[in-house]
Image 1 (cartoon, rainbow, N blue to C red):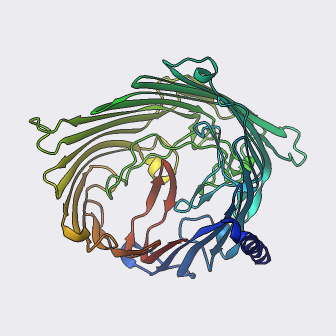
Image 2: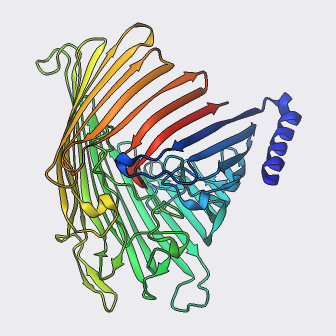
Image 3: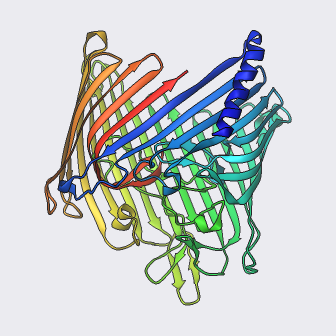
Length: 549
């Protein structure tokens, strides 16, 4: 609390002194809370802390080239379900920073967020819905040497709850525009090089390395409507861990390769991605590997699949598998796969386009475990580059967006998904596969003065897991500020028929928004931007308040 008072006082002091120099004060408040209730229908027993809340207060002040900020967080009496228990019953200053920026240099001291390239080698970022904030505490320097050459350098420790990681992270990144440097106008070519290292005490274990580094390079180019890029990374030999314990003292290196290519012009576009990860988990604490709360992750490894928007299409989602595990109960070395997107717009006035046009989007993704040989007794493995490893996930989906009139539009979605049950439940891979077909019809009717009615009907067919599901959503907007909804997610094909119902609404005025929801939460993975967290089934009242100023 003393830290918060000191930093807040300092911000207001700077603001008062420099108000005449047109400084600006800005920030935001976000509060997410829930009141949990026992529900025998889903075998949920409310915990002792029935009321839980995650609260965030962000204050910033900018004056010319200087910016300072502080974020205070409160998790009282406990954090929301599915968040790391390290946050429970805690409140304090979580992050703070001081920044100077001009045309040549950008320097931040304190906590900061940074990304090298696509983030495959380094990304520090915050997502409150995922309970993820791996900000680094230290020094971040960005330097524009020329119009075509820029550098980034980072040094510090990663945030872990309200504490810091055991390891110290240092890194440097360079971006060069080859087109600009060589005066090439017909092609836009960008090149990047990165290094990220972790330094951590071995606590007397001479078999462990003090320093573990990752080295990467990337190349991207654009020619007219075509673009492509490749990024490759190698990681020094490091120990592997599981649930806070070293699996052995043996060391294993890691690799990552990602290739993207695409084409886009008016009315048509496609994008293809290939990625191969072998033992490519990277944490600021070697013992953090295997944690389920996205804590102390150095790099960004999202699931490269279509990010779904509906209740039923979000039941079977893919969680990336970059880890190396050599145990009697589970063996895996990483993942390899691809994703392909195709977009096409039928012209207005054509037979399929109609008066207002029709948009088509198709997505295909396939991910499998690396084909590898394992010697469990000697903790040895050898993986092929691709091979024919276990199928983990396959998704084929089609989406058609059709506008019938100025005020009426629809979206039709079909998905065929096949997934390894271990990914859904977080257990060993290769136990059994789940095949499901999902259909969705969404229609929106707009009226005057911001009024709108949205209807969604969904169905999932499956002979596996929990069998069939049906879902419906009704949402009505009284204005652009006030909306209510009702939804039901009905699992009628399993051993027990269960309704995961919810009722709620939201109201916005100016920069303030309040949302309230009551109902049942279906347990499982919730993914945002390809990163997932597990949420247990629960019932209760939840509220979200956001204020920007």
